[in-house]
Image (cartoon, rainbow, N blue to C red; front, side):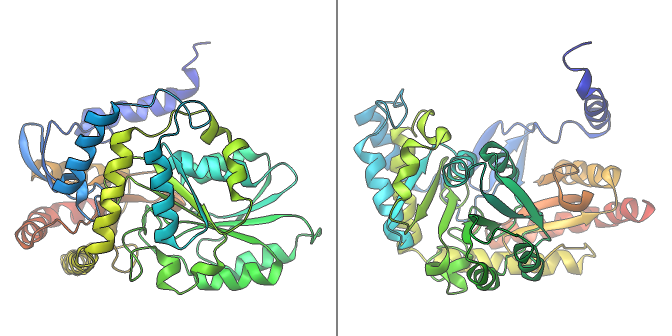
Amino acid sequence: MDIFEKYRGLIARHDRMLEAAGDPFNVCMERLISPTEAIIDGKRTILFGTNNYLGLTFDPHCIEQSAAAVREQGTGTTGSRIANGTYKSHRDLETEIAGYLGKRTALVFSTGYQANLGTLVGLAGPDDIILIDADSHASIYDGCKLTGATVIRFRHNNPADLDKRLARIENKEQVKLVVVEGIYSMFGDMAPIAEFVDVKKRHGAFLMVDEAHSFGVSGDHGRGVAEAEGVEADVDFVVGTFSKSLGAIGGYAASDHPDFDTLRFVSRPYMFTASPSPATAASVRAALECMRDRPELRTRLWENARRIHQGLEALGFETCSPASPIIALRMSDEVAALTAWRRLLDHGIYVNLAVPPGTPNGVCLLRCSVSAAHSNAQIDEILRRFGEVASEILTVADAG
């Protein structure tokens, strides 16, 4: 048997996509023009699916700090944090993140994906129980597998279901870790963190919140949904990424637990991966300055999100959640979603195509993301171009 035989069904499905609309999962940005525009297929295209929430990828301060770090420290560390890969810039970044979040300790990871893997592997083991929201990101599911812990799923954003499942655990002394996200990456809906805090307290559990899509977005200071709901002190562990609002790559985990630094020598994804480049550490520190000193970026982001959300609903699209920087449009099936994605790209609008098994409940989506850098003129153009293809998109969806 061929080693790829197990993927024959997926390969055939992908081939059908290629024939019908090109490859939606391998779109090449031939040239970046700005945080919100690129050349795709030789055409100037508005980016409406990049998670560049604060638009900082082209910020002059971030670019200059990154370039200076390359000149002074080279292009990479060539080692892990436990070998030669700990630079002063990593420690300075961890201190700044911990201070920004108001936590005692922070750890920096090379990717946001590894931040979830590394934190979960460091916190839980085979004798523990992890309870995760059913709509959790793939990195959370994969991290749970690596722990060897017993994993229990509870219904999405349902504190009552979590409460019920915690109550069924017979060994009340067993370590229980609850994992939720601030803003969920597919639908863009927010978790009721304060309610989850109440539940975890009643059962003596620990709570970890992944604020990947809410860091820089929610709360008066951009610290996430826990800040917005006033329960930061009751969140035991917070995880996030540098690849969304901060416009770089990498991730972090932070906590007030006095032994949290133990993860530095028990978390294999932290221990055995090369540390972030000097350029990344420098640009992230600069982006944190922007987040702190320019709250108008968050204000602009939410103004854009509400306007576009309202405009798309007025055009007849079905949105999956209230307004947020992630706007998911429900499509009837994969054919309708693929057709819509292609038509939008042909009209100069790039969005994400999201289909099973990567989506909750097997739904097919056009996944859009808003940036503070989207101008009023670009928003007008986004809505105009969606309007131009709306009748075709919705006709295909209704036919399904």
